[in-house]
Image (cartoon, rainbow, N blue to C red; front, side, top):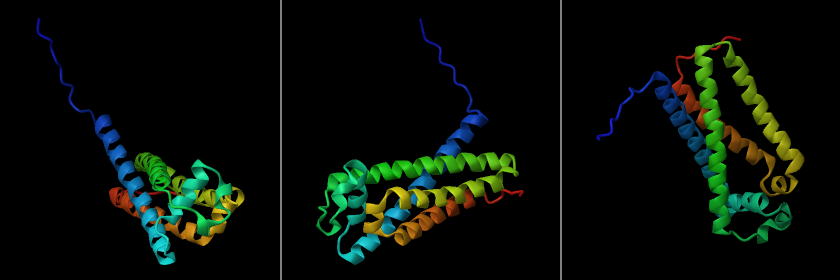
Length: 172
């Protein structure tokens, strides 16, 4: 008895889902790499490469109590790599969400302005949470460097997504 295999043609929904997934992955990766390169440059200028992911990884996986003397903080490669991976995953999730929202805005131009406002609130909210709850990290990294890094990352993600959706119109 031979098994029958049926091949279903690729549906439009499957192609769109694949496109959204690809856009989110690329946008998130661009944002994560942009931010990582920004902090790597700053760390190289200070003479301590990988200090920023070491600080963030220590705070994220251990506790912020270890950040009392950042000058003496050891750069543990396992912590740096693990934090970098988690950070990349977070960016891919944000990139995926942005791709989904932009695909929705292409269908309904009235959503576009709301998505833009959501982005602004997201950025302000991130900074507010960092100021309120991450004092040891802000003392080590300073909020202007974090803000500039976020703007650069958002710019790289937004630039890529804008090219992918350059024909989109937004109605206020």
